[in-house]
Image (cartoon, rainbow, N blue to C red; front, side):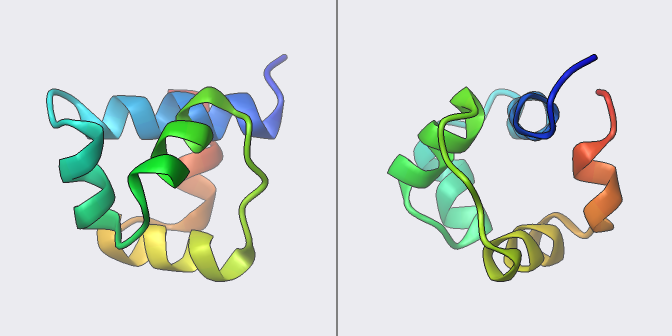
Length: 68
């Protein structure tokens, strides 16, 4: 079973698709470094940041923790 960090990382990489991390970070309203660390599962994320990411992706918070 994947950890929450691994599921978040996999979902973000999948949702980014062919976009660069820079493009995706701009879309999410976070830094490129944050996207990079989140996609590697190296960063804890605040509820505020998760809320921003979900709003920008137009998804529910549970959706970004589902297995992709």
